[in-house]
Image 1 (tube, rainbow, N blue to C red):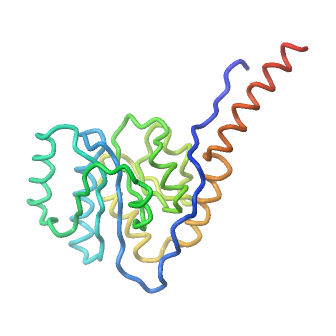
Image 2: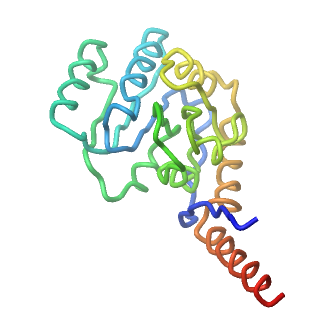
Length: 210
């Protein structure tokens, strides 16, 4: 009864517009400092499966690589899977919000070590539904089937299937966009974080006064 949890929050913003009905082209996005635990290899394998199925997808990968060697490994894997024209590597970006506005789905295939990812909260604020792995604090932000879809880590087929559910219309993208915006505002915004901290102070001061 002396421990309180107040989730981090990021400011609300104008969410990205709804997708154009009938648009078959999808832009997937991921934002990270790319390193092995981020599961980028899993995402590449999923993209290859989607391409083999004829899906019209493009990946916007925002961020730098942790080491030059890891960059060489990932680019070599990209070439081996025939994904050269499917991925746009933007490099480090200060204006992540501008990139989120151009994504239809935010994908975070991390293997472990995520806590409560700020980039997931930023995607929620931008109105971008999330497809992510069910590790650490991610399920605390994303409710599977309501704000996005969660899959087991290190399972490219499961990741590809989750993305396909959006592409096929099995998942209602506009409804999930609305849900993710509302959940961010109520639970993971700067105002909700400030209110949570204030409530901790109120409880502590009330206990001392008592």
